[in-house]
Amino acid sequence: MNVRFLLILSLLLASCSSLPEIRPSADVTGKMSACPSPFVVQKTRFIHAIEAAMAGETRAVMIGVTVADPAARTLSCALLSPEGLVFFEASRTSIGTQISRALPPFDKVDVARGLMDDIELIFFEPPEAIDRAGVLDTGQAVCRRRLHNGGWLDIGKAPDGRILIQRYSKGGRLQRCVALAAGANPYAAIDLQAFEWTGYSLSMTLIESEAVPDEKILGK
Amino acid sequence: MRAKAVRPLSILLLLFFMALPAAGADDFDRLRRDASRISSLSADFVQKKSMKILSKPLVSTGKFFYAAPDSIRWEYVKPIRSIVISDRGTTKRYIASGGKMIEDKTGGAQAMKIVLDEVAGWMKGKFTANPTFAASVREGPETLIVLTPKGKNMAGLIEKIEITVSRKDAVVKTVRIVEGAAAETRIDFSHTVVNPVLPPAVFQDLP
Image 1 (cartoon, rainbow over the protein chains, first blue to last red):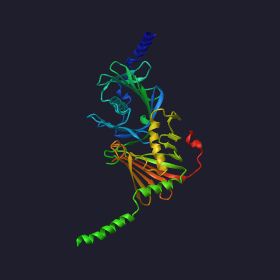
Image 2: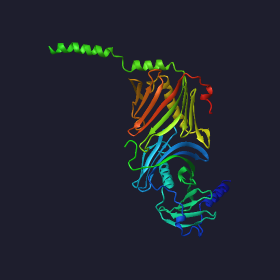
Image 3: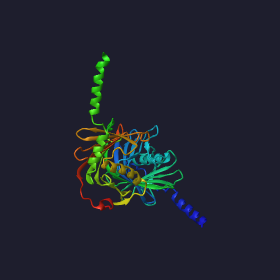
Image 4: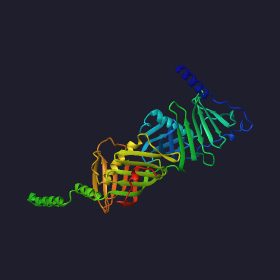
């Protein structure tokens, strides 16, 4: 029984662990302009309502504040309960990640780092150049980058107009899938799926956003 | 000679300070007496959260209901709907998910119970009950109660809590929770109705 279970599990994992092949397409191949680039282009503050779920069950509803500066590649973020309790506050610069407040479960280094990685994945264009472009077996146009850590990142457009960002491990296992809203503001609605042993999903709905001139910070 | 001149002045000063009302104790007794006339209360509230990461305060609005001795409904309407109901020692928290309200099964309700128990105490004029805080009172056009953490276990979380109470009817008008130099939460209550008739369902059901 256990052997059969392990066999099925292995087959399931194997089916998820291959990087999808990209076929050349006259529409996309060689036309890097066809690659979607939804990422922030100027320093912007976003406030989102965030619904976090594990195993398909909503576990928490939060308010997320993110200040993303693409030029400096710096991030600041805070997570609050609807009642205003701040349970996570951190910033990331080229020097590293600085956590100024972290209540459980964000007090675990891996969780905090994973959260900042997710935010970076959502808001910043990867620094790596596009490796190849084409279409998947599904017909979806996609542009692929080889990440500096050996992994892969696909950015493409879903048939419903949403922009999909998919990050794969070095071995080709899908780790993250981000879907950004179709239309003028891709950050109006964000869905993130994390495919880990303790998989989770984040569903983010924009409350407000604004461009941030430098030094426009409360209390400064 | 000089000693003789000083002595009457000392006695005069002593008598003067003895004539002043005992700062604090009497005021807290008065607050408790005045608050005992409140058996129920309803109000709207506006919460403004200020943080270094924000350019302007994050504004939340909602409704507050209280029935003596310790039933509270604390309902946020915007930007995210959430409801915390505390009644007969049980606290439940509901969060918006997929267009409907679901019960929060994580520890969020228990964290809010601590807060609501404290708020229920304030509604009864009990500002000195929590041993975690030292309470002081300042009289002015409104009564200002300042709660300051006694120990270091609140360090980095709460610097002080300021509660403004109406001198007219002992109703809490504002709560200001100062977390640090650049972070605070201010809650202003408005449209307050003292002793309205609140159906029990307010503290039991979701709309």
